[in-house]
Length: 442
Image 1 (cartoon, rainbow, N blue to C red):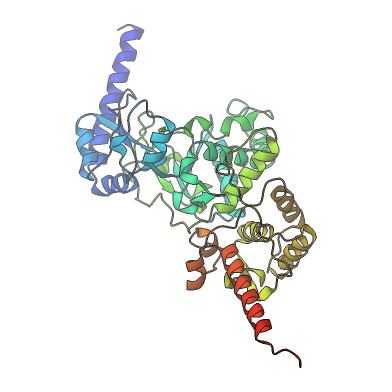
Image 2: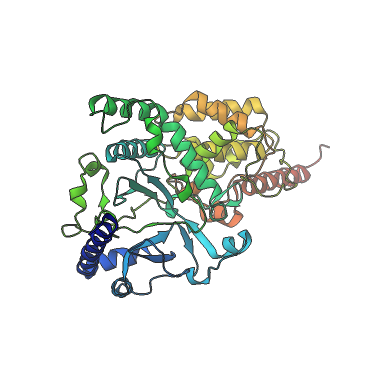
């Protein structure tokens, strides 16, 4: 038997082993359910032994569809990051507007891959640490099945609008910006930790230079429209390992043997996120991108509107909405979102910059943990580089996301600016009536 024949026989043996494994593994009801539950509102496409994808678009209608595809030769399953009204309505050649109309949201997924599992593991730990710093406490982590990891932030965690722009329509632009922001934020620690690893490791195993961190940067190719990633608990054809879900605590000690498909325990990849908990992360990333690309116009606002500040002279705090009063008392969570609300409100009512700065800094001192003055200074500066816009409406997640529940009156008036204008008008009307009723002096 020549070398070509030997290689063909080897591949045939491997393929037979994988097919036997897939039949046994995917026959498990809990595995079928895990893949099906995650696939809701996603495009889901099976892959076959030679890594050829099935027809697109496709989706799962029942948990049993997983095993049905396996019987037809499927070895793995791949899902979209984007969430759709009906994935089966997708088609090649759709323009951006058509895609936006069909897209209901998107999850942010970091795809970490490297020549070495240890590098990927270190980078995953750093990313989770950065996400926690920006208030994203609930993240999903899973093994890719080879030498990397996937980290997911659910759609629920993101604000549905920023400056009147629908977040669902900003795919893949905003996910790309957040990914680049995470890469930039992680560079120093990544270089430090990977260098320590390479110094300890055998020279034949690790690349010993400062370029090593490039081996584990997230794969930005994944952040593109209709791109697919391996579903949780799907098998990997080359390694015969399962894409198992991990907790942050399990990440450090994880080894490939823990992904043995015959021993896996099913866990939920999608974390139970808090509504809007990734809002600060997204806004911080967009501000970072503006600083990095001052000449580039980023779509964070709708087409310019003819909004002009409503000048409120001698503003009395009694006219402030209850929600704003609560914020001004100082808050524990969502301080960055609160800055955004206050800046837009104060500028909308024509408050002078000196008075605005005074009120913002005084508010910050009332917070249990004040924001850094440098951060507030930057946010004020950014605010004055663009035209004033009203603060978010009460029905947006900005308020509830920081523990502020608007009153029925506030919800009826829709916006803090409307509330102030209405109360000011009522007070002025009362004053005029009082003056008219005063008897003339004889």
